[in-house]
Amino acid sequence: MYRAIALLLLALPAYAHEMTPAHLKWQVSHVEGVMKAELKMFNKRRDVEFYEIGVFDKDWQPVPFVSRYKVMRMPYLSHVEFDVYVSAMDSVVAEYVCSVSKLRENSDKKTMIASRICSRFKP
Image 1: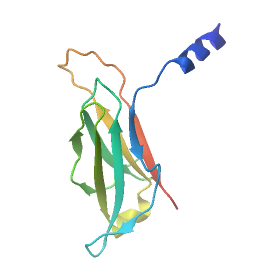
Image 2: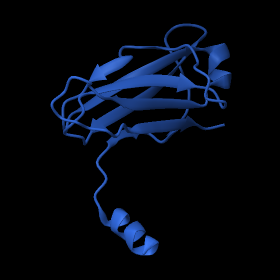
Image 3: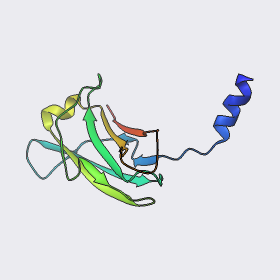
């Protein structure tokens, strides 16, 4: 029975957002001592319009960063290109850039599933 349920769940479509590239490399920015990463996101969820960006180390502790967006509005089927900037010192410990769907409490759409997508820096 559990096998049938697992197969059914695998057959159901998964609707989430996408963030590329999956494996990042730091680039030198136009500011001395600051590194940047270029990312793209695509929203495949009708029920979510806002996404929060975060940068984390290998232990999932937040790493200070700057971006044009910390929380971005992205309507269904739209995409956003953005850069993430960190100090050269923090780029050594930064392991992940993640985006998390932000669910509205007062929405008439009762979505209960948040999606989280992470890209990882290449060593």
